[in-house]
Length: 414
Figure: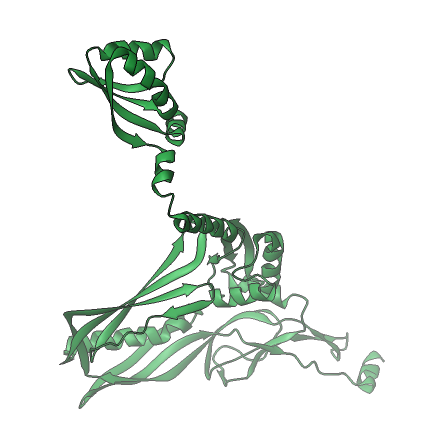
């Protein structure tokens, strides 16, 4: 059905009105001479119908023979559309050029989408791809997805698997990283030189389980930063109990150190509240390939907030074009200074305290206890005290294995 409609449109047709003494006779002649007509409507005294261009010209002699008057009501189809714009050659040339340009750009990669990365940023991965020659604007025929996957896995050992796929003008990288850092460390340390475990902080050894290596401290001992806790070698002795050699190993164990550190923080008692007005200004920035075209705009506001909306131009979801637009919204506001209440101060101090220790807590550090006090000094809120932490030992250093002199080893053999 759709194909028939398209065929009629490309060939062109007209809608006409038949009136006279006997328009029914003309309709019968159309059927007898195989003239295609459709949408025939009886209007009570005259008929309206659609007929193709070629059949319309053949209809004229039959209309004179039957005394029927034909009135042209409407012209439809591609031939009439082209005839209407026959003098606008540049318009059709521009349309043709646009289609050819879009078709030509479909052979290139204009967008690289990275998904699933946690430890490596998008910028780092894009730089690695650039070192392989994979950049925005590269021909899709030059992109070997299997080579990209293999290269990224070699560059970043913590990536369990990498999937590279070309969709339209996009290259989509799906990455799965190994979240178990102990397994990653074990892989990295395999077939390496012996290492020892050392302390990063000053404190007291709270718990200690050594799986491999020679322990140099015990529970309850005080340690200092850089002190060796587990040596990365074993002493090999003979039957007489004398050391004949040292065998290097990778020191391993679960050691926790209890330490206390001073906590200090301060922030202003005053803060600004933004009262937005109805005055706005808009700016626009165009990006085409690697070029940026910025429309300079003078902002008449003393204080304002900027919001940015990035619009990527695309034909479909995966057919990304190398054109984008950034629309900037400048919203005027009037600032009003206010003071924190005591409840707000306590809440903000707690929030800043949690944010400071958030990174180390993710590394296995535990907060055992805290003694923090809040003091108001003029326009400043000063937070200070002590925090007791339970820190796991993870730092490793290369081992210097002691040497056994020839004389001592010889005496041990007799």
